[in-house]
Image 1 (cartoon, rainbow, N blue to C red):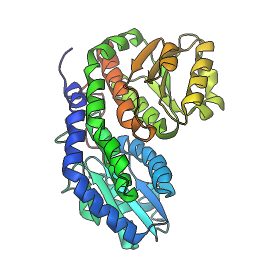
Image 2: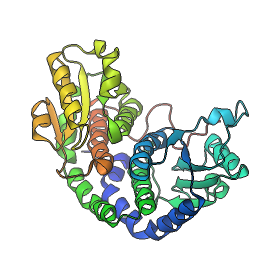
Image 3: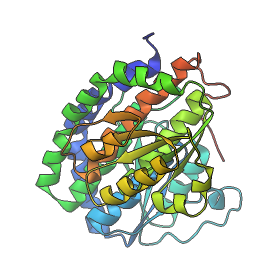
Image 4: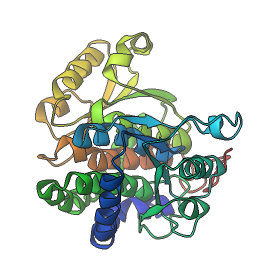
Length: 347
C-alpha cells in the first residue's frame, strides 16, 4: 500500500485518542462544572460536514446519558436570514476542526450575546471559533493534512463522550473511555485486509450505508468519506427511513454497508441485514457479532464488548479504511479529492 496522509492519519487515531484522554480530562471536568452550574434546559450544536456527523452522535449521547434535549443549529438563520432563534437557557456547542467557518462562529457569537453558555470543540485553540466561545475543548490531534478528516472526527466523538461523562460524574464510563485507544489500535491493525476487501467494489458507483441509534452518525460519516474520496453516491439511512421508500433502490448486486453494534439496535439491524440479503444486496457489515458477520459478503469485524454509546468511535474506522481502499482500487488520489480543500468557509 502506498503511504498517504490519509493512511497515516487513520493509523494515528489510537495515539490521538490517548493524548486527548491524557491532556484534556481536567479541562473537561472544569467545563462540566460550569455547565452544571448554568443548568441548561437543552443543547444546540452548530457544525458542518464531518463535524455535523459528530453532532449527530451528540444528539444521542447527551440525550441518553445526560437527559438533555439536543437540536442541531440552522446556521443560515444566523447569517443569511439574520433571524436567530432565542437561545436563553441553552448550552450552545460548536464543533469545527479548523474553527474557521464563519457560519459556525456566528452561532457561537449570537449565543454568547444572548447570554447562553458557549462551548466549542476544535483542533485550533487560537481560531475565531475558540475566541468567540466562553470555553474551548481542544482535540490535540496535531495537524491534519488529509482533506478527508479522520482523526479529528474520532477525536471530536471522544471529546463529546468525555464531556458527557464529566457531566454525569460517572467513573465507570471513564473506565470505558480509557479502553478505546487499545480497541481502536486493534482495528487499525486490520488496515491491509480491509483495503484488499474494498477492491471487490472498484466498479461501484452508488451504495447505501445503514446505521441506527448512536451509529446513525457513523452511517452519515462513512457515506461522506465514500462520496468525497471515491465519488460513489453513498446515501445514509436508518433502517426505519430505509423502509419508507429508499429500499426500492436495492437490487441484486447493490452494495449496502451496515453498522451492527452490540446493544439496543442489534435485533433491528440484523433484521434489516436479512431483508437486504433477500433482495440480493451485496452486504458489507461492520460488527463484532458472529451472526451479523455471517450474513455479510464482506465482513469487517471489530472487537467485541464495546459499549454501544462508545461504538461509533470504533465502528467508523473500518469505514474510513474501506474508503481508502476503494479510492486506491479506483486509481484515485486519496490526498487530493477533486474540487475540495482542507478548510471550507461557509456562510
